[in-house]
Amino acid sequence: PQLLTGCYHEFRMSHENHLRGCLWSPDGQCLLTNSDDNILRNFHLADIYEASQTDVEMMPQMRMSAGETVYDMSWYPFASLEEPSTLCFLATSRDHPIHLWDAHLGRVRCTYRAYNQLDELAAAHSIAFTPDGTKIFSGYKKTIRIFDAGRPGRDCDELNTEGAAKKEKKGRKKEGGVQEKKNKKKKDIPPPP
Image 1: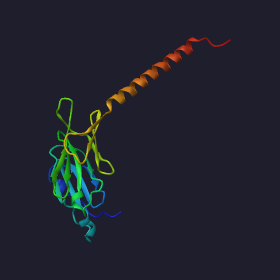
Image 2: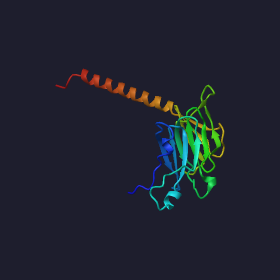
Image 3: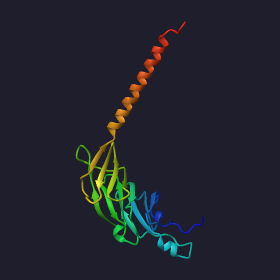
Image 4: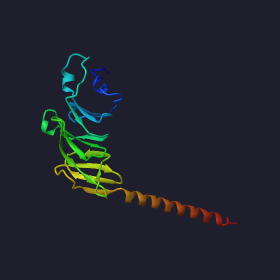
């Protein structure tokens, strides 16, 4: 392995600005990062590959402010630097809806909003596109919501994960209780002569 480049100055702009995550684009031409300063950065790596010098520092092509702590990011499965209309990604952050960002222009294309039982905006903890890019799976507290990628807004299907967990716990308790009773009964039965 050989070090080709680094990104030192960009992340030293503010004190204790640590990198929190990075994702390669599906075509391998871009690197998406988020850090403690709540800035999403898109680096185009084609410039680095073509440069003959190894001491060239990476600089982001685009900086996008997420506003709050970024929880998760996901590239569109067919994102390509060669086709700017496909160069987009999802990001979810605290107290914000899911945003579909245009990584070429650096702006939000659309949002997907989920609301809790009090009709308050809920932030997703995790997000992912389906492999064909038509659906967005998003994880919330005790719920998975599935958005149609072609229909931004608040319409989504919901899968409650709390009920399944409760049933599983009840089943375990019941099985444990039954097992304990069987063991006690076996102890009460005298051994055969």
